[in-house]
Image (cartoon, rainbow, N blue to C red):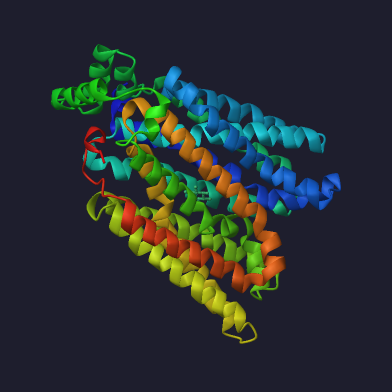
Length: 438
Ligand code: BGC
């Protein structure tokens, strides 16, 4: 069917992987309240159920380069879709804690594989001038997934239906699996495997008949100059790419976004929004702002560019974290909770136009084709490691040093991130993947 060859349509379908990522990482914050009651869990086991996904994602992304380079971008997304279906089903049907933790671990592996492969696939099929927009559809889908998780958890909470909350993810996973059967493989991966004629056919359909020869030549030329050996990741020409990707992966997480995405109700309670319905409403507003500002960022990525958006957004994140910390210092004022709410929303908006989409985008852009699988794998694995570290230590940090110093700590890391971007991150807007070199 012709529609399956339009680059917009193909990108939209591939981005369902992002929806699953967002939904399955977000839904547990609501479901865990009822799982705890049903299974009568101690805090340690609750922590394990929540973090099993993150550990799985770390493992999945670590081994993903073997799959994505060997069987292709489409094949590894298909494996992820099958794993999503199986593990969501077994999470929903779990009869005990061990079963649930194991299912969530396999779900994490699916998230790890798809979180890496989807942006990579999108970057490799997109024309240079639309790459920011098309790759970031994945981030938009992540934010929509998180918002739907909040909404569905809220809607099903009256019935305490945690099994449905976990099981609903099967539907988009099955849609992704079926859609993948009809989507084309990445033409760049085809060229990597020496299948130039097939790559030419796919690219010509994706470019709707426009002249593709310059693009093919460019890919051929850069392949003939690249080394495939993993040690060359540390060679002089490739090292800056590794530094940029690892740096962005680190700062995306250590500036604290998931303390809000995973713990928003707890933070709102601490800020004086006493009732559960107030806390949930405030949490949903976080989800809505996240989606809205990601939409705003999409056309700006290819127009204004990655660097200015990163610097602008991270400065906003830094200021809101700093003021937020201050608000907790003078917490007895009535205006305080509104200042805290405003800071949280501004912070999420600034993340959504900067580190949110741009980390995924640039990690998929900066590595040369032969090293793209392994390079993204190392960086995204680090990203999941930092996610695990930050979300795992947040409750103890709150308890040990209090909210002010916790948020100031993230503010200091954000400042370090801004300096890193100014010094190390180049502009990649409008350049073909083959022209991005350091
Ligand atoms: C991050 C996730 C985060 C989400 C929030 C993604 O880019 O990788 O860790 O939960 O954005 O929108």
